[in-house]
Length: 250
Picture (cartoon, rainbow, N blue to C red):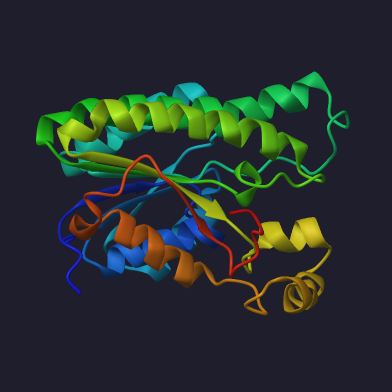
């Protein structure tokens, strides 16, 4: 299936490892030129080298809002435009409703709410000018069913979904789609940190996930690549789970 991504320019946040790296690899494989962004210059250089010549590294920390405001402009200067934005701006620490101080709440708000807002605001004018654009937010199943151990994610990711749903309606007529992927359990460092070890989360997945396993970042990348494609032009304003059947809600 030709996804129509040949020559498109994508900016992928958090692309040095895990889900972001899987997304960047999938987009590069489909012919996109990919600006891979992360706060770690070393890991980012390694990721760009492994993804191949289609990947160009840009160092940026998702909590540095001034840096994020400049980042899409730098990518557009390098490649001429930004066609695709993937907002993968991190995950806050675990804990219950009253387990975190205001500083942790503010940091989660910067990375999960303000960062996507700033990035989207920077790329939408150019996308409108081209009459084409794709914004995909790496979200969580916590926006559909809360996780008692992930209160900061429960609260802030919902705010981002509300913003993106509003944005989707405003830009749909400009050929721009805006979607969120509700992420389930994937074989990533983040999942291992939350669950104690990758072996522990794999064992839990065999018991708790209907598919009987963790998802792979390659599978995640394939979904995002489709959402960014010409074939997905009528899909917008949605929250799409990818969770191996874990969610129980209708």
